[in-house]
Image 1 (cartoon, rainbow, N blue to C red):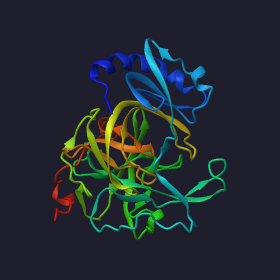
Image 2 (cartoon, rainbow, N blue to C red):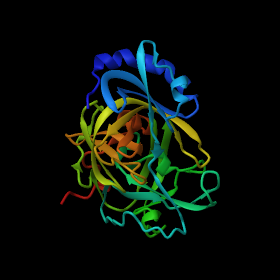
Image 3 (spheres, rainbow, N blue to C red):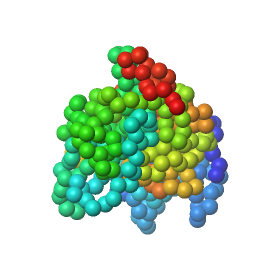
Image 4 (cartoon, rainbow, N blue to C red):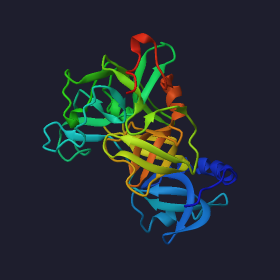
Length: 337
């Protein structure tokens, strides 16, 4: 796989930004990105504006011009969905993850204690549903030193338009057998859904925690995502997976459902893996590079392709810093074994 250099990206980005909003209004278009043009299943080595559609059909070549502003285009069929898990409260489905951690770390199952009423056409049959996602990492608030939050996505932390500060969260999630009250570990403290960010911060309770990620270890800081670099994530469903960053320019139209509707996330990180990179329940996991620096917050995907918020705007909009070391004695994480 070849990667576009910064010189090529500098030429294409202004053109892509100029046309992406108009492209996103066209039927079936769910995203606009930058990547290598593929023809007849083969890479061409040429840079292109990549247009994601729900299903590639004969109408799309007419809807999307072959080039715009001197830049080639490429139409790619993708099914990009938010990767939280949602099941009916009375489902017979067996839990995917049954891990119970007396000491909390990143990469574990978490979910709201409350259930949600969902009706057609969003689901086939109306009912009460529960949600599972991933607790990605820990952050510390800037305005209240020592206040530690667990980091996850908006669509795991808030779910619908009836969310409120103080909503309770359990580990493991209710999807995975968590019990409201008995398994409560946090409450919703803040959230953001705008620009390039779908994020939420959960104020941690009395359960001890470590500023590290299962199967990855202690995180060392943050970094800007770099095209061509290898990243890892530890999610509730697929656990530890690896991929390569192939773009930091994805703009996606995602259906948040549950009274929130379609929202556009810009400047998303696109990761490609030789295998499945993420799945339902992995939303909220953090992407880390080879130096264990967090570069993104995983939100959505399609098989071997994953998408993540860049970490800098996530931290900025939540007004927090990533926790990489001890906090004041009253809230010090559990020491590493």
